[in-house]
Image (spheres, rainbow, N blue to C red):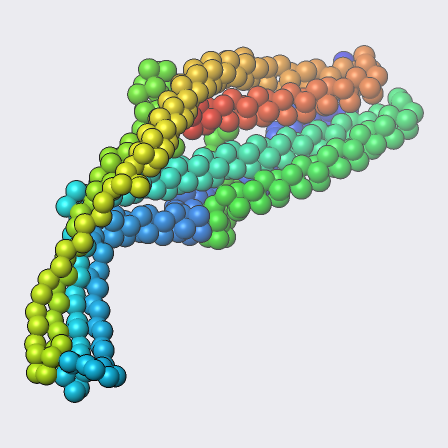
Length: 416
C-alpha cells in the first residue's frame, strides 16, 4: 500500500480511481444537433421520390376525370362533283355530318369507379413511400447515434491506456519494473488509436446513409443526431398494433387494387353493349339547288364479341388481386406477432446487460490499484481496459439491436 501512496503523490491521482470519462464531440454542449423531426421535415420537403409520388397522384386524379367522359363528336364533310351524265348541281354536291357515340350502359360511371379505386391505390403508394423513407431516416439516425457512441467509447479507451501509461512510466522511473510494460502499453495504445480511426470512418459511412435517406436537403442536418440509443418507452400492445396495421399503406393499396379489379368486371359487362351512335347530316347539290337534311343511327351488334373473353378475364384478374391482398394481410399479421416477440426479447437482453456498466468501471479501478501495488502483471491491466471497452461496445450493439427491432415493429404495424 505504501507503493500505491507513493505513486499517487507523484502522479496526482488516487490509487483506486481513474480519470473521469473524456467528453466526446457528441457530448459538447456547443455542438449543433438535429432532431428526428428536423430530419423528417428535410426528407418530406425535398426527397425526389415523394415528388414523383405526388406527380403520380396528380396523374391518377386526372384519369378519374377523363374516365367519365364520352368520346368527342366527329364531323365529316364529303364533296362530290359530277363528271358526266350527272344530276348534281353545277357546283357539285356537299354532304356534312356530325356524329356522337352516346354511352347508354353506364360505362363512363363504371370507368370512373375503376379510376377512383386506382387513385386510392396511388395515394396509398405515396403514403407507403413516405412511411418507408421516414423509417429509413429514423434507422439511419439510430445507426449514426450508435457509431458516434462507439467513437466515444474508443476515445475513452485511449484515455484509459494513456492513464495506464502514466502509471507504468512512474513505476519504470522508480525502477520497480522493466521497460517491457511500457512497450506493451504503447503497443496497446497504438491499437486503440487505430480502432478509433476505423470507428470514425464507420461514423462517416453512417452519416452518408442518413444523407441518402433524407434526400437533397440533408445538408440542413448539421452536427450530431439528437436521438437516444436506448428505447425508454414501453412496447405498444400487440392488439393495438394489429388494429393500426389494417391501415398500413401498402395493405391499403393492395385492397384498392383488388377493388379496382372487381370494378373492371362490371365495366367489362357494360362494354358489351355500350351505347349507340347518332349522326345529323346536311347536304347541298344532290340536284340543282337541292338542299337536304337527315339523321342516322349506328348500333353495335354484340355478335362476334359479346364479352365471352373479356368478362371471364376480368373476373379471374379480380380473384387473383383479392387473393394477393389476402396473402399480404396474412403475412403482415404473422410478421407483426413475431416482430413483437423479437422486440421484447432484444429489449430485455439490452436492459439486462446495461447493469454491468458499473462492474466494468469497478474492474478498471481495481486493476489500476492492483497493478500499482504490484499484485498483477501488465497483461492484467491491459485486460481490464479492454474489458471496459468491450463492455461499452457490447452495450451499444445490444441497445442498437433493441431499438432497430422496435422500429421494425412499428414499421410492420404501419404506425409512427
